[in-house]
Length: 149
Image (cartoon, rainbow, N blue to C red; front, side, top):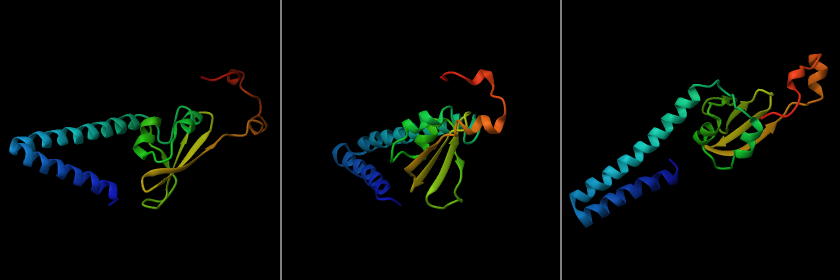
């Protein structure tokens, strides 16, 4: 268990102890209610992120370039799932470190993210070669030219 998680637990116990010393059992009830509300808010956010992610295909993102811009080192997988609104396509084995996930957009651009101990360590944007696409596909679609939004 990481040190930070133990620190949260110790802070909660410390608040309960101080509330009992200062206000007695009514203080413990108030702090316990506040801690319960805090846990419920985090649980509610977690469930909302998973509900939104379940409505989209695995590993799909609206724009890989925009995802690349929004990523920051140290972000959790849940935070990245909230940004992408989808589960990432898992590339690493179950339980292996680092965990590697990939998101792909409609233009075949991909973002591959590495999570070390649950935190985003590295990510890489890969875009398809624009000159290789017409050579392999034949005639280009006239509706695909111009800027995209």
